[in-house]
Amino acid sequence: MGAAATSPSAGSYAGRRCGVTGAGGALGRALLGCLLDEGAHPVALRHGPEELCLDRPDGSRHPVETVAWAVGQEEALASLLASLDVLVINHGINRLGARDADALRQSLEVNTLSALRLFELMLALPPRPGQPREVWVNTSEAEVSPAFSPLYEISKRTLGELVSLRSLDADGGCTVRRLVLGPFRSDLNPYGVMRADGVARAVLRQAAAGRRLVIVTPNPLTWLLMPAVETARQLYYRAVTRRRDR
Ligand SMILES: NC(=O)c1ccc[n+]([C@@H]2O[C@H](COP(=O)([O-])OP(=O)(O)OC[C@H]3O[C@@H](n4cnc5c(N)ncnc54)[C@H](OP(=O)(O)O)[C@@H]3O)[C@@H](O)[C@H]2O)c1
Image 1 (cartoon, rainbow, N blue to C red):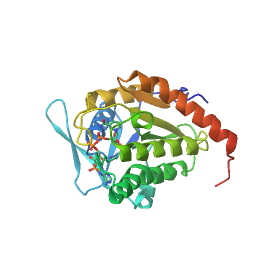
Image 2: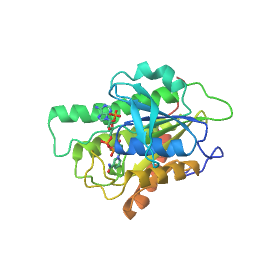
Image 3: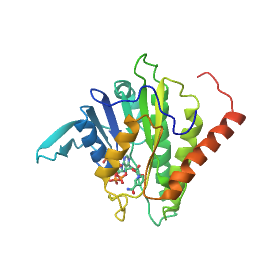
């Protein structure tokens, strides 16, 4: 299948239960707000106990169903994940300027391994006839271009490569979408040129149109490189690996 193929189940997320990790961050809040606007039931997954309230355009505050989790305890989310139609794996850290062993361990644990464990839990759920579940993985355009933060690039690129490999076994049971985003303003990237709200709206639009590779960036190189890299990875991984029953 082509990297940016459309799916027949494309459509709006109205009425669907959509969980987002890193919910308290700039993009997490923006995605949850857009999902709410679409009529979805948003679920915030946060690595702290604090319940999430979204600031709405009319000035009101909307409390969101919030579930606490911690990196390393992904298994504890199994029953919550089974209740979701869509999981957006969005949490992340950027240890800008660091190269010490502790920053390396943290970057791999948060950006790569915990995301991968959640991804595997979603893939392992029994298929649902009619409306497949979806898992969206937010890597970054740092998969294919410099983000001036080597640990961030390495941890996100590794996540992207492993998602490309493991998606080969996703079949029709779970639709995998990859979010490849350029710089937007947030705690993680105070210098971002885009705004999280606009990025979230573009992500929702592309996902609803059925795109598997969701790209939002002003950088033309990402638009050229990412689909090529993803297609090459899929061809290579298919050629040299075989499926094994779980
Ligand atoms: N900003 C950019 O330019 C950019 C570009 C491309 C991709 N991205 C990706 O987009 C995603 C969201 O980033 P953002 O810019 O919105 O950043 P952000 O505002 O810093 O949000 C990241 C969120 O991740 C969660 N988090 C942080 N440390 C964690 C930990 N140790 N364990 C579990 N969760 C943790 C926190 O949410 P809770 O407190 O709610 O758990 C935090 O608010 C990230 O994966 C990032 O890599 C960002």
